[in-house]
Amino acid sequence: MNTDSFSAQQRHNRGSNRRAHMRETLLQSAKSMFAERGYHDTSIAEITTRADMGVGTFYLYFKDKEEIFETIIVEGIEHIKTLVQEEVASAPEHKFETFFRSILKFAYSDRELFRIALTGEGQKQIAVRAYGSVNDGIIELLNDAVERGYLGNEYPLELLAHFLTGMLNQTVIYWFMFDEPKSDAMADYFIAFLKNGVPSALFDV
Image (cartoon, rainbow, N blue to C red):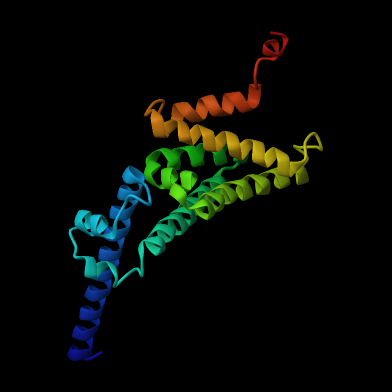
């Protein structure tokens, strides 16, 4: 490669890196605004102000507010999904427990994403997509447990998966109101509850 070609490649790489950085800055700014104010009460002007960019720059990357909102959720969910799958795959045993601990860990560290994903902020299809992604992961683990002989036919798998997904979602929503307990302690409570259940004596009250 001659000097001119090398310099052109360097300029191209710098330009690509700059565009990627600006896009990511817009996404992070929008995520913070949506989590704070909600989808409908957030304007593109507010997003760009927080990102320290002009409104015109926004339209170089996204066509409208709905597109950046959906991009935040879709890319965020896929990123979390990949991280959870990696942790579960690397666990030599207790994959079921590892799944829930991983979800809770990443949900705590990125509560802005989970707030707008689970509430949907007026975008019902977004909340459904987020819920479905978690539910699908649980069903996959349940099917694996059946195949390996750890789970019988005590419950319909689809119903059990929805029970567990609902419990997980409500656990994360708790963090929208309270900062404690942190993810490790919360995971301990969650796993203990799954293992031990509600005290049977309560049903005699």
